[in-house]
Image (cartoon, rainbow, N blue to C red; front, side, top):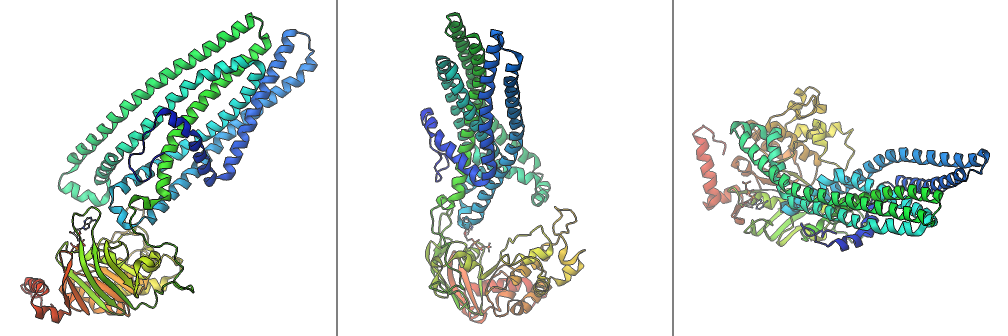
Amino acid sequence: MPDPGSDSGPQHGGLTRILQLPRVMRFALSTTWSAAPVLLLTTVLLQLVSAATLVVQLLAGRRLLSGLLKNEESLSRLTPILVVLLVAFAVASMIAVSTSGLQHLLSERVSEYSMRRVLEAATTTELLDFESAELHNRLQRALMNAGSRPTQMTLGLVNVLSSLASSAALSIALIYLSAPLFAVAVVGSIPIWFLGLNASRALYDFAVRQTEPDRQRMYVQLLLTSRDQAKEVRAYLLGPVMLRRWRKLYSERIADLSSILRARVVRGLVGVLLTTAVLGLTLGVIVWMITHHRLSLSSAAAATAGLLLLSRQLQGLSSGVTSLYESALFMQDFQEFASRPEAVSGRHRWRSSRPAVSSPGAAPRLLPFDRLDVEDVSFRYPAGGRDALEHVSLQLRAGEVIALVGANGSGKSTLAKLIAGLYPPTGGTVRWNGHPYDVLDGDQVRAQLAVLFQDFIKFQFSVYENIALGRPGEHLLGNEDAVDRAADAAGAAELIARLPQGLQTQLGPQFVGGSELSGGQWQRIALARAAYRDSPVVILDEPTAALDPIAEASLFSHSRSIFRGKSVVLISHRFGSVRQADRIYVLNNGRIVEQGTHEQLTALNGEYATMYEAQRSSLIGDGASGL
Ligand SMILES: Nc1ncnc2c1ncn2[C@@H]1O[C@H](COP(=O)(O)OP(=O)(O)OP(=O)(O)O)[C@@H](O)[C@H]1O
């Protein structure tokens, strides 16, 4: 089975794979059981009944044939046997019909269960893990396979269960009719199984090998098909270049796949030849036994029918096991991912099951918010060659507004994510009310923070939901008044009033009836979401980047009232906003190089003063003097 921490999975020989079958089978059964226990039980029961009907049909057929051949039984004595035969046939056929419906339903349930586990794992995966290509490869395989593999596994499982039950029943009947014949048929079919299993592993290895190129191809596909990218692709005439890239990646995939499929077809053909040889051998043994009076004609006829049935069941078993093995390789791969996301990076994680803040006992108290301290914090991205933050310290006290300023890439957004508890520092500590983040429950801390990111989500939902999602713990509906107040505070009330259905207007033209907003209007909605969250600490990363000057001025004259009583971390390149902060921290190459009030920093005549002066003089030409 694949190792959850590796992207390639171990290599095993054919015998090891056969030995793994019970484990694969157990895994398939336990997954299906977790997803749909009643459906699985019903299916198993039906397969057992169906297997029993096979034996009944076979033995009743033999009894009927023997009576007819001896020509000594009256029709009235044969009639009950005929009825038994017909009833057994009808029951088997009815079970076959209902099994297909059950299988369909079972597959859907297993698909839903598997996809849900992948999505749950994805939502609880730490933000830092999304920086790792390995996580994306595994996630990609999980998502790709969660759709089709559960169906394949369920079909494989039902086939295996039904073939196993039928083969066992037929074997008993055949041993009763002629043990040597049975031995020839079973021993002859063993090599066919090995062939199928080898092919399964080759396909799995192919999928692992192709995950990264597949992701690259899908990325290019997204560039060619998504609404957000469409304008730039057209403006730069990128279509043909991207298409060529996409075709190259696809051709490489097809070339890799075709060599595997060729080998698979060859194995299949060898399998057919072997099956035919086994059948020929057994029929030869039957003829020999009849001519040497070792088998009566009626037993021979029943045994031939039984052997043909057994051969079909064994073929079903072989293909069932193959598809079970193949799908279980993929399923187990992503279920291990789903149950152990931390195996991806093994880095420090938040404690996840701390008692709630309000519960009595030793749990550190998060409320009321008193202070947040960043102490000598360093941070390096997994893919980064150097530290994005080095020995950074700052304080935020209740009710304060602090600002982070600095050139592009100086580390402001990274610091904001550390303050928000989204990344764990690689050195130093972040404390909430004096408690280090790593002894607190991450979800509890994040519940006390509102963050407005530079690239906030534009939910393609209604305006109301866009704002109400600020407090996902609450029932989304029925909070119109509070949502209205947040919209008003963020300067979005007027734009909402102009929308066709006000708060209930669907946003984004991807869905029927959706209205699109401008960048600045979207920003006001995102700001309303942050205000609606009503958390003691608010982090605003470039909250006014898309706002027009009047809206920006209005936002900052109102910011104290929007976030009245809150503690605010503000990141901005606009000094008109920054100057109102209680304390300003200036970052340069991941370090804090200056700190103080606007007046102190301009008097210092250092980096802040230079940046401020540069912005001021660039605006003075336009007649702006507000800085
Ligand atoms: N996901 C990442 N992986 C690796 N390095 C990163 C990642 N994100 C940011 N960096 C690096 O970390 C440094 C700080 O980036 P950050 O986004 O914090 O800067 P910033 O001050 O917010 O910049 P800006 O003003 O442009 O928004 C940069 O050198 C950047 O290249």
